[in-house]
Image (cartoon, rainbow, N blue to C red; front, side, top):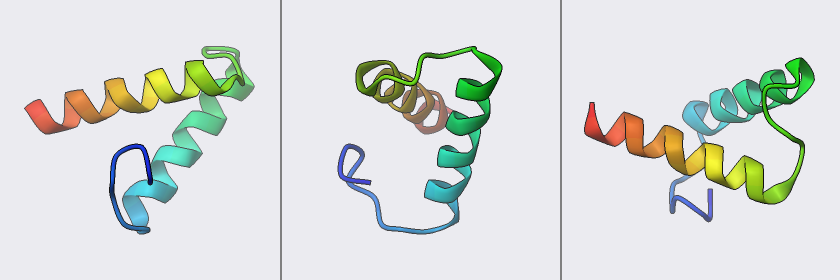
Length: 49
């Protein structure tokens, strides 16, 4: 929430769920930098849509 300056809500929950699923699948590493990069990428995709 801090990184994207957003409030708690369903979008944050969905994002965390999606990240957790991708970590479990091995798609992304469970490392701070990898997770932050993915969050920023998702934000860029959502804001440009």
